[in-house]
Amino acid sequence: MTLMKRNGSMLPAFPGFDDLFTRELFNWGNTNFSSTSTTIPSVNIKENDESFEVEVAAPGMEKQDFNITLDGTLLTISSVRRNSHEEKQDNYTRREFSYQSFQRRFELPKQVVDEDNINAHYENGLLHITIPKRDEARRKAPRLIEIA
Image (cartoon, rainbow, N blue to C red):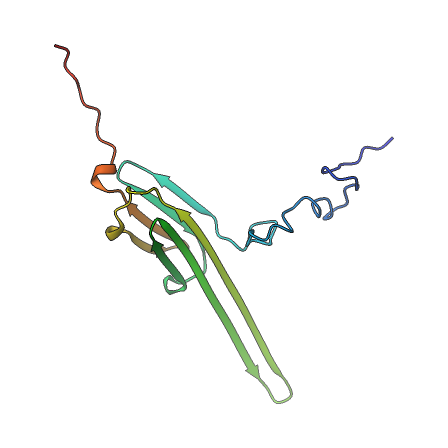
């Protein structure tokens, strides 16, 4: 008797074939068609008392490749990058081109974000976005209450 791996389907597992029917192939809202998530950059979001810190891993890009918008409470980070190269010789023409794009959206808490002071910078393959909190939304230090 031999054991065969199954992923919830009645078909046996074959190398590179076992997730064909279990991945999100027909999820039309899924903009990442790669099972390895290589087309959408990874994002880290940290919250502290003062702000939200967003880091987007996007090596090889330039700061002008990014577009960051805030529409109400919806923060959108997107990028479109096109490269093309053409080389002509006597008996041939060689053309190469590539196209990369992504879009990530995040819903920010209402009445918490100081919209006028959001800033971003790109350094060493990381896009850093600092989203400060309003004064009234910041966590205050514990207050000592005296017992009467």
